[in-house]
Length: 88
Image 1 (cartoon, one colour):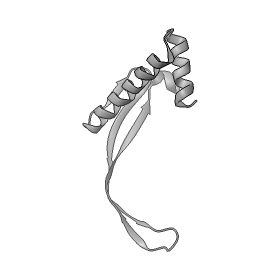
Image 2: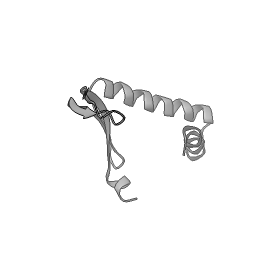
Image 3: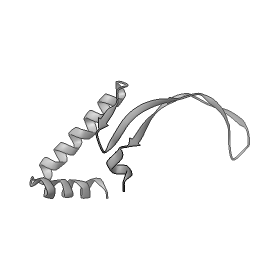
């Protein structure tokens, strides 16, 4: 399912227009992004939790040349499925 199909499904389920469903989905995505950028986490009981983790710097290898490279530390978004989603 892509974003357009999700908007169509949300509009049909909620009995709202596609424009309203798009606005609601965009608001949800925007608020999740803002919260994660601040270092917080978003928990939706039964669905799952979005959080930010820091991946440590490490050494790696260039697969083409075999040369050693430094991989810098970075933040990544993690999703842990909730109980309802795990049942699928």
